Length: 184
Image 1 (cartoon, rainbow, N blue to C red):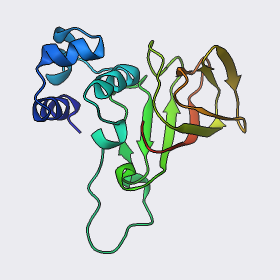
Image 2 (cartoon, rainbow, N blue to C red):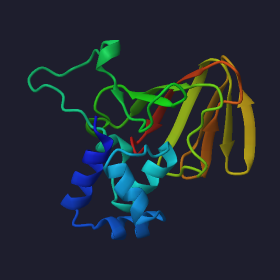
Image 3 (cartoon, helix red, strand yellow):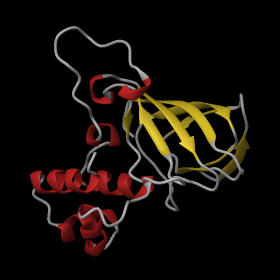
């Protein structure tokens, strides 16, 4: 997906200038311009701030159009939708199962390379989220609590609380998570 082009289309469809969106999101209009030209990739937290300013959820922004006809219940590994804006070897991967805009639950297959995180800003959105660490370790900040979780450990919290994910380890961390409603 061309994130810059998609952001520009959404911004224009909502009648927002780059300057107005930047002011709402607490960013510079130069940053918006660079993102829309695909000259920089926003962190997960920065993209979330931009979409909150529109307002639009990450699930809506990255919605895939499922084929009409019979309902789709099963997804091959290649049919997940990547909803993390960054690319490259050290980028966080958030792969969404199905089209979260048509369900009341969002499921993510998350991968955090060593030293990767969701960005310097804490995330916050309506809903609850939970997950189980499959491999590696992840440092999770929720409100003022910080905990490093390893394989088999899990988390469950109100997503309105400020939160952040960071891999402090030297191997990739894999998490399977859920968010309801799908507001991320």
